[in-house]
Length: 374
Ligand code: PLP
Image (cartoon, rainbow, N blue to C red; front, side, top):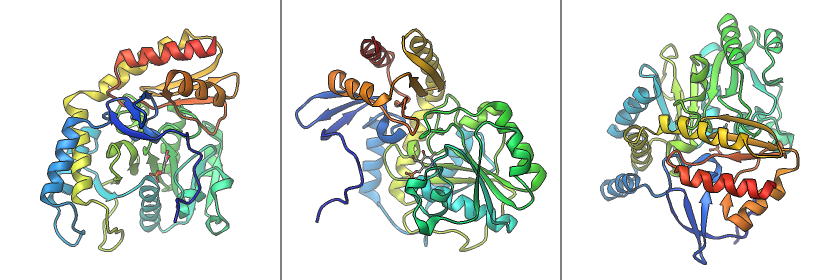
């Protein structure tokens, strides 16, 4: 047997990681500005994270949700406190797509409706409804095509009036569109979506899978707009590499036994990993740090030539070039040993570093990019 060949991979075997550094099997060191699809929030191999996960493994790694798992309550309490949503409930699952899938179900259970509104450029995952709400026909199989989802233009307030109506079960929007290349919603756009949802009874789902957990300089990117969604989905940075995801559910949404469920979601190891991430975010004041470092990176990047558009909020950054980004990213990796991300917008380089990245490492990147663009 061999792995199913679905990924375009770099011919590099990473065998070790620490902070924002990666090492390959030949001992070469790389700077990681991508965190493996925005996953690394507190840095690779953080000592507190290792200690919590390894310590938990010594006790118990797994039992199902048929017993009381006290760690889930502790995690929910800490997440509620740090995120500013202490009165929301938490449903734990395993991936971003699964979190969104459950969010859609909850919305539909709650208001009995079927229509979903998503936005052009969106990415919400690869499972059934999540992929049908993703604006990329190439990854939507015929079986996923359904009449439930309609796509509205990004950042267009006018389109909301007719697009969101009394049949709409849920509106799903990313806090910042990630895969599209760090496309930031305007404050007015997010506020208009919230107003339209309130007027029609549609549930507002904020997909913070990529933009959440401090990356934007606030716990959630939508908090820059001062709105309050009914449901928020999280994954990626939540476990710093351990597969864990969550659905934050507003207090007006009633739980019913068997409404949602999962075998692995909320297991002991996942909770220990997720708790360790929150401990570090809290103790090292990483959200404030992300805001400051993001401002620094943005201001330094503004000085570089040949950048067509620079989009950033906190450390979540999209650098749109005049040329396709692939060649520049390849030079950064091969000549400067720096990992960056691509975007569906082919001219954009996506930068998603750990919130613990140092100013020195940001400078390394800025100099390398300047060198490459000149
Ligand atoms: N939502 C957003 C905004 C994402 O960026 C992603 C993944 O890139 C997902 C959902 C899907 O997450 P996962 O790959 O964990 O299913």
